Length: 431
Figure 1 (cartoon, rainbow, N blue to C red):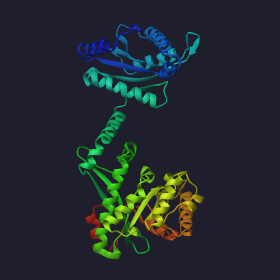
Figure 2: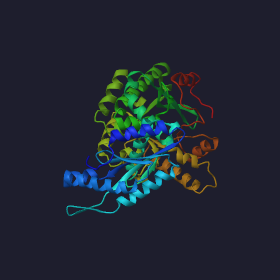
Figure 3: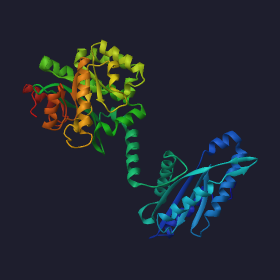
Figure 4: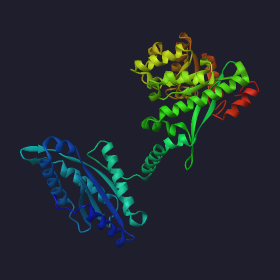
């Protein structure tokens, strides 16, 4: 072999033996990958790359010399160290530190001075608590963390982080079929006019009834839907569902029916088919455009004239536009002049500050909320405060001239039938 080290097959055999013969003991793994090796290999040629691997292998061999340690090259620029009878996590960490220091010294090959570093994933545990396959998988995952966190470093395996990322992977893998299996549904949270506490609109909030994880709120999967590209088809489904419900309420309650507000993820706002999709769905359900409101966060507008143009077209077509979570993005108040909207929704973080008397930022939050309300009213917009949870917040918002509120003080998001019950008794919510 090129480096003279144990290969993948021999390493797996020794690892299995360590588990078989080492019952009651512990093992440690250091899985390392050279940072930037591909660049060297591609730019200077495979011969230089091979010589670099030989040099690195020689350095590592000088560090991994114990009778209970095995160094193997797993392929390419990946190396694995097995520590049998490990004394604890400190042992592989100490080895990883020595490896990083050793590799920091330049390598001289064919007139080139090459500097190479490594990312190292560390697993240390009792053999009775795991299997060879699990230990290798976790070392590989941890190596990925070390690379993604900046390279030239080691990371130890974190079971909580691993479980969280495994859940994310499971969700992203099952999401496309979940839409086909009709596992998604929509709840609606009331928005209440502060002057008389009557229902004026509802926000559609998608949920995922996952077969093994239970009911998941949108913050558990919307980002994944963005990453996988499913957000456009999922968003279209939510829009159709919400418009169908809006039509049903309009037929049943006439002018007392609430406007239905649907969130647009940034990727949806960039979809060239958005305007056409909205128009087609409104036609399908014969829903007046002003009965639909689309919510988008302020950050989705920044530096994106295309999205602004599409939303201006929707506004000109009488679809209502709401700027969601205003104050949490990166824009300044003057930016309000450029936004094509009807409604400004003040972020809940500022509303919470209204009841935080004596806290350092409380006075600032009050001034920010007051400024937002006044500026929005100058534009002729309706102002909705989000996450209103106390009577104190409600009363202060009223004094400031805020138009409407949404939050647990009035109601959590619920099924369409829960909204029906509110409408049947006149649409008034008691706070």
